Image (cartoon, rainbow, N blue to C red; front, top):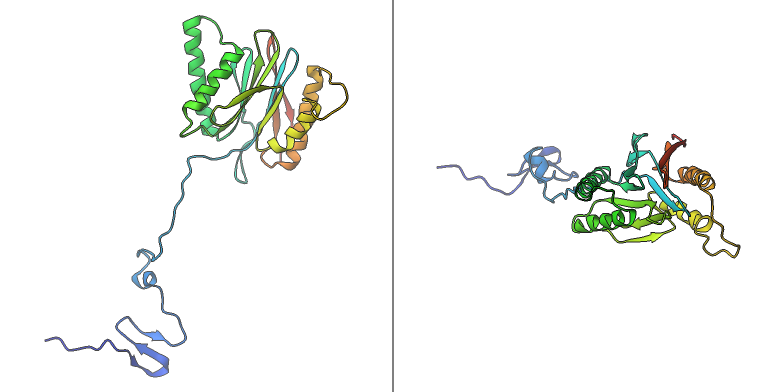
Length: 261
């Protein structure tokens, strides 16, 4: 027969208390149950672990429509949090010889979106033996984004080119495909910094002086100033700006150096 052992604590010298749960010292808290059980024991309160399939990699894209041209520009910095992953990552992707897509957001989703669009462009070219028109590509991009509306591409797009009449055409999108044709638009981490300037200088909103058609050379210089200013305020915009000018002759690309810090 096992000897009887009382669960009542017995007082020992020097303030020690012996009990069935171990010795304690007066004036000290009892260790948590997980600590007594060892490092592998589960904690008393559950810990929530979050996972997101998205990452915002920063960057700024702008698009401007002219009388017979369109300008799409974006910086080349790729970031994640406070870390610069690349200083030479293009956010601009030509879809035809007369239209260009600019995308900011999650790099992996942008790459996947580009792949899907390229496949659709090749299918159209094989079926019709010609390039898709710029308004048709704009509609196709909208339906492609809307198709993924329940698990959308984390890509924020500007699209532009030359339409059938030879005029500049710019389209602005949200993440699930809602779009509109406009004269100027921007997206990405620096959107809030560049839109007010573009609305005033390019779109000529809330101004009383006469609006004039800006030549593409002047617009290119304006784009450089816009990105220089944006890079001073937005840590995700910098390194270089890639400027694509689309005309009926094709696409001309130039690079402009920005701050690298």
